[in-house]
Each structure stands twice: as structure tokens, then as C-alpha cells.
Image (tube, rainbow over all chains, first blue to last red; front, top):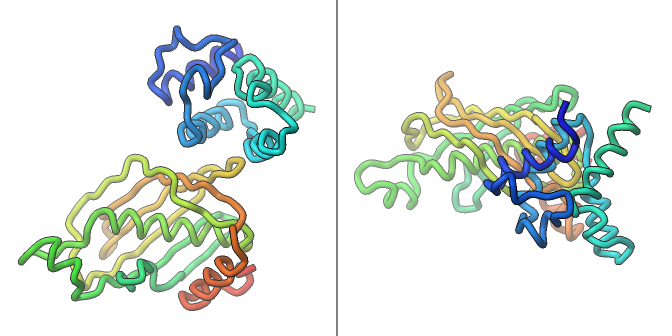
Length: 93
Length: 155
């Protein structure tokens, strides 16, 4: 069974045509990988499907816009994967 | 179909919010300046307008599901297939269904048929956000009423 990171990295590589070996846990999806908001919708769709969750993108965006969170908290892949794991766990609870 | 107003849907004929599907009809006008250019002596409904008609059909479904609290904006069109020529005067039977509701975006699959045969289909992504202006929402509700949108789904 692949890790959350492997699944997410494969989704990003396939969706955005980014070489898989350049996608690291410490990569920032926007700043390092250059993923824009439209591409991120495709990624969110694939993540939602793969994990059976609904990434709360609107809430995250609002928190960033309000200065309550940084983009690193949501879009560095390690952090993103931790949040996915949390959503998966909450779904099963 | 009021091409000059970019209103490509004439009538919502079925809206099923439980199944998350919609059916609509649209009659392509016999004459339009669009057909004078597309193409001279050989008028054809532009494929981009067929895609737009699928987007508008999907959009009405999304507005119904959100009770007109949110507005869908076209974000991407995937795998659009324009399978055959469509001519002035023909009637389009449009269908759309939701395949995913994400946070701030929705994806549909939509199709256009003429005389029972699919002529176009696509997967369409919308950004879905609050109406930026209440007048905008009211305007969309007026259009909805004019095309037979069920009152119970009209916010």
C-alpha cells in the first residue's frame, strides 16, 4: 500500500506533467512546483476521489487570506499529506 | 436560444436535485450573423457554442443545488467532443449531471443530442463562489424564471 505522499505526488506528477522525482515532501505546491489555482482544482478532485474526502480548499484559502494561516501550512506537501491523513481519520471515526 | 444575449438555453424541462441531473432544450435560430461568418454559404453552429450550451446547462443545475446562493464560473473543459455538424434551426436536447462537488468547485458531465443522437459531450469544471453582488443573483433568478426553472429550486 502506497503512502499518502506517494499517492499525492503521483497525482501531481500526472495532473501537472511534473517529473515525479522533483516532487519532494518539502516541496511547496505553489512556490516550488509552480502549480496554479486551476491546476490545483484538478489535483483536489483527484485527491478527493483517491481518499474519499473533500479537501476544504475554501476554508484554507479564507484562512490564508485572513492572515490566520500561511500557505506553507497547507501547500507544503508534507503538511498537505498530514491534513489528508487527518481528514481520512476523521471520516473513519 | 438568444445568441445575441449569450443565453443558449430556452427551457429547463427536468431538474432532479436528488439525482443531481438536469435536462434542457434549446432551439438554434435559423438566422444569425454568426452563421454568416461560420461559414459563408455553409452555416454551422460553432462548436464553442455547443460547449457553452453544455456549460450553461450544467450551471443551472449547480445553481439549483445551491439554491442560488452560489454562482458557477466556467474554469475548464475537458475531453470536449464535437461529434457531428449541427445546423441552424435544429433543436438541442441538453443533459448534465454532477460527477464531483469539491470545496469551491464542481465538475459535471454534459451532453448535447439532436434527434436522439449525441452530437457533443464534455466534462466541465466550474469554480463555485458566492454571488459577488445581490443584483447579479437577482438577475440570474429572473433568467431562471424565464426558462422554466422550478420555483422550489429557485432559492
